[in-house]
Amino acid sequence: MTELVHFPMLIGGKPAEAASGITFQSETPYTRQPWADVPDGSAEDVDAAVDAARAALDGEWGRMTGFARAACLRRLGDLVTEDADRLARLEVQDSGKLYREMLGQLRAIGGWYHYFAGVAQGLEGRQIPSPNPDYLVYTRREPVGVVAAITPWNSPLLLMTWKLAPALAAGCTVVVKPSEHSPVSTLGFAELIGQAGFPAGVVNVVTGLSRKVGEHLVAHEGVDKVAFTGSTATGRAVARAAADRLIPATLELGGKSPQIVFPDADLDAAANGLVAGVFAATGQSCMAGSRLICHVDVHDELVRRVAERAAAIRLGDPFDEHTEMGPVANRPQFEKVVGYLDAARDEGATVAYGGAADDQLGGYFVSPTVLSVTPASTVFREEIFGPVLSAVTFTDEDEAIKLANDTPYGLAGAVWTKDVHRGHRVAARVRAGSVWINAYRVVAPNVPFGGYQQSGIGRENGAEAVDAYLETKAVWVELTGSTRDPFILG
Ligand code: NAD
Image (tube, rainbow, N blue to C red):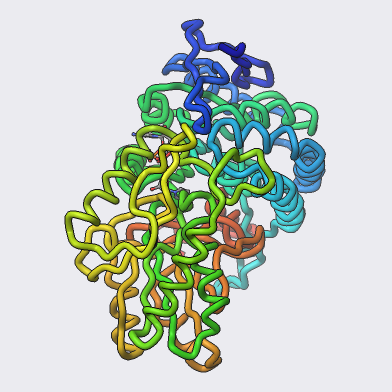
């Protein structure tokens, strides 16, 4: 057996082991072998991290200007870019995602810290004209406080960055809790925090095998805000815990996003967009475009083209530059995807390609799968979080929109058409936080991202993301020095 690499947590600016001394192992899904061991933190470690975050907020960090915070954010962006290769490798080992994709993602992540450095420098209150001329009124934007940032196992560093960068821009301090399935890259990233010049305790990372670690963090009386990405079921539990404490929660949850293809669409472009939407990242993407809503006239041809491309997808070692799809990230997820494929067969889906696990490579591999189904099918309705595309047909625009919106989710969607009027018209009627016209799976630091309905609450990225980490204070200044009637309002 190869020797396991070990990474400590980060608490109060120092590397930290779990108070219990216990560690747990992280498995690499390509070989199904453990490759790293990390601290198995518990409530005691969460308490220490929250205390450190509070102390940092009350200390030097709390007194720093937006310009000084921006300088730290910019340095962190530079460091992540310089270290992209090492961090990408940690993500690949932990989650089986393609090295090619993760390297690109890690190189892009620096842009988020740079963008939010600009936001930190530009935070402004406003001077409000008072209806009563005896007062000067202005607002201050103040950090909401200590933030609990809880992330899932797909793209841990990107999804952490979507929380960390705006939280730090706002002047908050943060306790990050990565997923028990892929904790390592976040610990590797933590090594850069001190180098970027953040005072001790501004960013802390706690890992733990039990879901109780996240639970304890959200319920902690020292936490002022929760930023969560994960499943809708866990999001509900997090929202309940936040409601009990009356603290705000930003929730980025699941999705079952539609891709609507009209008969005038460029079918090659649409087929490519469908592949990008549901087979990239082995379909383990919250924004996966997993529901194909296709005009009846082009269904057979489009499904044929997507199935043909799916058949040519190279499965294999995620470190190999020729590999196009790696394994599913962990055993429970693999079992879940295979369970959905069984359900599709039982419910009479027509399999254009795939439909089963691929046992030849040893890892948690599933064949890219293209199914034609009915709108009532389980695979068309429920989030699978795997490489499974389910297609249904429509005959007119209203029916397409009805099918697209017939879901409890609302994270993303796409419209494929060459008709510019129709493109905008349909995009406006799809109830989702992001809609691409003739494209799929594009994000940027300055463009808001988030869900309607059960896909979440609040937005990450974009100018409005920072609002979730700020309180607004109105300051009233009496200008005349006179005494007023104490028994009337205003
Ligand atoms: P998950 O909900 O199982 O876990 C997410 C995180 O929450 C993990 O760190 C976990 O340890 C922690 N956690 C578990 N129970 C908790 C509790 N009671 N209180 C606090 N924290 C708790 O999700 P997952 O399986 O890791 O990720 C897959 C899901 O994430 C999918 O549903 C996917 O759609 C969603 N996702 C959404 C987005 C988005 O931006 N909308 C992005 C990526 C993934």
